Length: 338
Image (cartoon, rainbow, N blue to C red; front, side, top):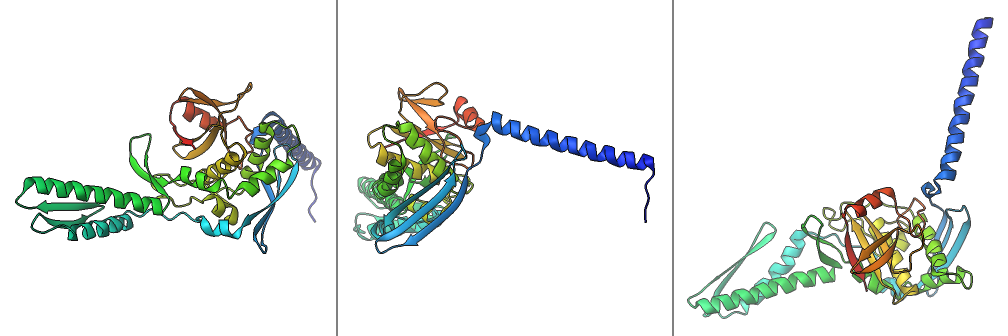
């Protein structure tokens, strides 16, 4: 049995008191931080269920908002909607795109009279070498122009069929990314049941800000998947709106597209924008700003900013400090939502 001297006992009590003091200080600081910085609160999705019915898939959500209020929501997406829209974004692979274009060029070359010109199509790396020879220089130029059109149209067709679009980064890099604006346009009508479910939860005579606050708290509570580099990822990780609902997680681009689709159903004519940062995306809406709103101006129109990403519960009209820095230094790009 170990016995402690009076001195040792006093040391032990001093250690316990000091530990208790530090614990109280830590807890007090945590409480103060929560009170002083409510924007740092994190979203919490309590429950998610999807159930097949006779007519579609029913979605059920429970979550806690920034005011620690508990919400629930149910809506149903019809089967035909789920079947008509992509659930996943195909990864962009240059080799496959090149093969698609090469096939189109080869078919076009076979239709050219060899008396007019001889054509050789040869893939080289990610490029395609088109060699046209003949005795008539004017005919050669005509065939070359014709094949360039075929090449361009074939590539555009491949991008469209796979929901991709050309994109020039703020560093003037040519790139390919998911066609966010097309996804928004095609998802508005299918997501009307979801948008309507939110609208019905809002009190009568509420402003549009009440809708945005409720919608944001829900989207932010959906589990977040980190955005891969928009240029290097070739679309990997992006989830189309219906796909995001089905899998119940998404990155910032995916959540921004989902939120835009639902807002467009709620406000069909109000001007909207997507704001792209190097590794983030948020949204803007042409509502009248109030004091404290973060805004951005585009083509003479002022837009109130909002960020549906989560898990931070950032209120409508507010953005993170990182986002502020990017916008203040002009490191962003804007796409207008139709």
